[in-house]
Length: 328
Image (cartoon, rainbow, N blue to C red; front, side, top):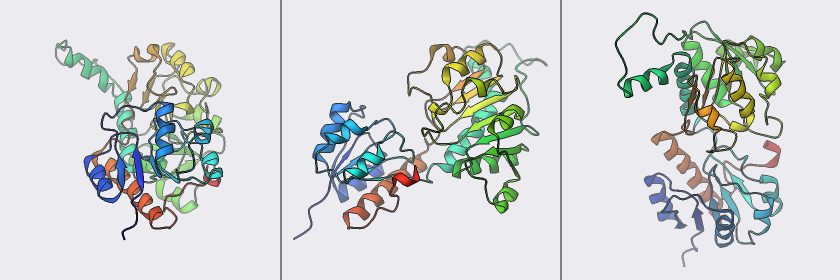
């Protein structure tokens, strides 16, 4: 007699090949409307599922896990970031948590460089003029930005994505500097031609471009606060493709409006999709809707990792991408 298939609830629509494969392997419930589930709907989903597949927009806290019941055994997160999940409480309740690390590295690094170029070369301003039909022809002093070759890039967070950004930046002729919880091994520093700064304050004050590539944890919340943002050079720019909470968004908005920072490129925001309207008004800011990992290839690979984690768990083994509290 065949083993009973796991009940899997997926909170958002996933790429079609991923959903098709899930339906072949599991008793899967899909979110056909692709609507963000409420807290109560997430709790109900956890009560009726063996496995929940949430994503970054699904905040699952201690109170919700306390109401989840006893059926849920695995939260197979669709994405690498797990700051929206209370992993500690989940593990205490006997619920395993897995994620999808490494998949979005190259895509996010590409987007980081794209934002650096967009801000420094004023690409959105030119695009807006063209779309408005206002361009009167080429002029010697129109839309002058700055070249990125020779500029100092300070990378905050030198994990997989930070290192991928560094490799790309070197190709563009940028000088790579970084601050990290732990210094990289000498051979990696040499390969990346990267200079380590023990003091984040000193690095920030000397860079032309700051790239945020660290995760959001209690220790990185508002790591770029008002005091640290004020250390930046007036002609410097900051880009963030990691987590919005790392930057004090209100302080950044004030400084951009006052011309104390030259520009910013943001793919993530402190309060999710609720963006400070004053930030949206600024011409020296490039805002994107969390597109860093939005490639067909990347999103399918993320789904494949989720499936592998669930299948491995169903076979009685430890999911290969198991998240443990000690990793946080």
